[in-house]
Every structure is written in C-alpha cells, then in structure tokens.
Length: 185
Image (cartoon, rainbow, N blue to C red; front, side, top):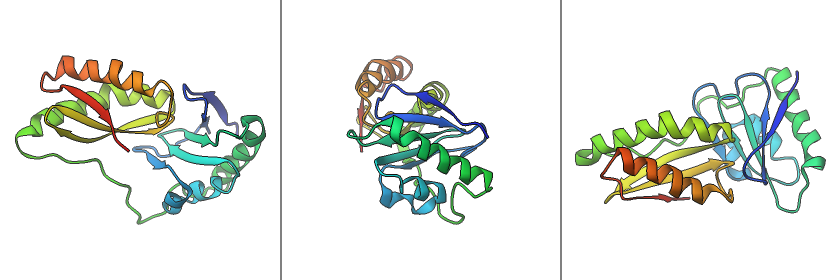
C-alpha cells in the first residue's frame, strides 16, 4: 500500500491519501482526542504524540499537529498507523454511532437555506476538500450565514480570507438575502 501526502494551505496540517475510500460519502471531524470515540482509526492516530486534530474526507485523512512538533518526526508514525489500519481491513468508523448533523432551518428561510446549501455543496466543499478540509452549514439568521470550518480549514491562516473574500462574495452574488458570512466553532 502506498500513501501519498500533500501539503495544505495550513502549515499545521498535512493531508494523507491512502489510495482508497476513507469515508466514501460524508466526512468526520475529530477536533480533540476526546471526540475520537466513534472511530477506531482516529483513536489510534491520537496515540501519536503531537496530534491535535483529525479530519476524514472521502479519500483522505487530514492530520493537525501541535505547533512545537515537526512533520519529519511525526510523518512515519502516522503513515504506519494508517497503513496498518487499512491493510488489516479495520473499519474507519464504529457502527451504530451517528455523526453530528448539519443545522436545519425551516419556515420562511427554507428556500434561501436550500440555495445556500446547494452552493456550498457544489462550489465550496469540493474546493476546500482538495485542501484537506470541509465547511459545514450551521445556520442562517437575519442575512448572516454561519459556517463551521473543519480539517485544514480550522485555524488556517488563509481561512478568514477564504471565508470573506471567496465564500461571502459568492453567496452574496447568487443569494441576495445573504449580507455576511461568519465562522462559528
């Protein structure tokens, strides 16, 4: 098994591509060791010193490291855990434990939210997935779209520019009711 790695715009994250499905459809975010209970792979990876966050995409694993750690020292251990996990045929996610869902909005904003989600799913999420991250819709209130950034997007130095200059401008263009986009934890 050959696992490729890719740099991301966030220097604290590295994208690992095992050459097979990781999540298939959907994503899984593990911002802390305590959130890894629903994934045997995440539990194993968090045993490596210096890992502060994990994000699983369709065919990749994004690893976030502590500021005082070096990729050159961590990378072999991470590659070993990922390779061992997939070669052994172990599941990425535990069965019967549901992932957190996106926020739902009903009522008069339902059509606007549908347009926003469609734009996020077709134009934004594929682009940020290439950089090892994801953006999740968390709400729409009084013209403000609330988004949660995951993976390499969380804590990335360029994420504010991406959010304001890219996503906000695009949503304002296609959905006139949008006045601003804000990141939420």
